[in-house]
Image (cartoon, rainbow, N blue to C red):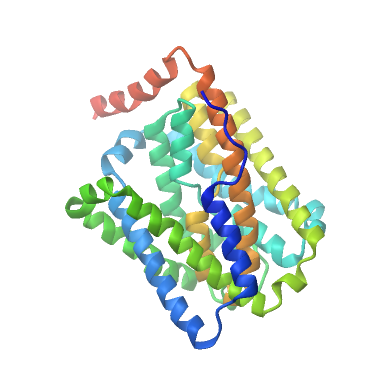
Length: 342
């Protein structure tokens, strides 16, 4: 098996290029208004396609494993925010207040979907349970993330002081409604989407790049790079490494102590230690004042790349260890047994 390359992928390079482009050629004035409209349409299309792609059968197959899902959700929406708050006295001096607000926002986000499932599969974990946990985390995050932001991010840039319920309403309108529409239309377009996965990937990555470009354009106009010293970027790198290391350590320890088998441990580790860039960037655009979005998503972009590199290495290492095939059998037996009991 080939070794994982600990290098940025093409999408990460595109993100960096987008930030550089926005730093030198930001969008202004009426062009920014039109660009914002195009971005909103792209984000709505993204969640519509994700809704149409999500298989209900896979969700039902893994949904009965409630103990695993509970551990993943607690790690995602309780452990991370508690770590962000507990470490704030030690880590916040390393970065600016705006960047640490972005770190706290990162801690409130749901888990990734695609990469959590992919890494679980590579490591020979319980893939049906990973599909269920990651998807549930993404959906619940639409409601939980804004509420957590109102509790842990003491920053008036968040929604400009609007109530969390107002923010939830905006997120439901812009993200959940398209998602539900996609689910309802899945019988008609689901097969077409399965055959044309490149379309979803294009919309997925393209919408994120649009949001990042618009966010950093406005942030640059507000003097973002004059407010962030180079030392703060180094501190942000350290914070990201510490958060990921602690999340991995806790999920490994807890999953073992609770008696989960190896396949389930792998699922808990990968679903419970990661944060979603695809959900986080659009949410930041809705939750935070427009001039603050650039600084808020910068920690998420960095954490995203670090989690991909580290989890890719772990997944290939653990997958290479599992030569007996027992883990794969375990991951297949549980959903089959669940269906048989129904």
